[in-house]
Length: 209
Image (cartoon, rainbow, N blue to C red; front, side, top):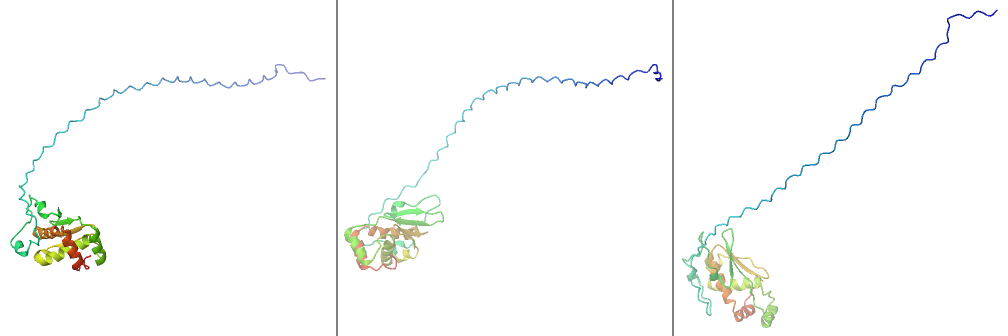
């Protein structure tokens, strides 16, 4: 005989599948509208302050002495003219540049002065003499000519002068303006082209040229 079924026994109920709890969707925050930048008020351009005019300082110059008479024939500047004379510039005055013509007077910061010259004559017959004697005809040649004239007529002034010539320029330097005036007197003599021809043909200036 078949065994009797037990009463009250029921089939087990299937386990209910756990529903995955749906996570609530986060409400997306609405993007706040960007605030428009406040317009910065344009600053008014400032007018440049008017510059105060600089006070003009009136320069007072001592009256220039009367120009020296042009040098006549012969060299008129001698040692006797140099004794007891001083042309040194004072702190608030400048020497008369016309006294150094035909040279140009230049003042330096170290208390020295220089006389420069570059108006060298040039003619065919003079160039022929230069070529024959092997002379350059510029600043070095003029150095020799000036020394030659000063040895004869102003040797005392010559001792106070340093020479710094170049091919295109004659230059003499000194603190003694009297000595530089003697240099300028020699330069004035060399404005005579006939004297230059004579010196170039007869005087040996090879140690300077």
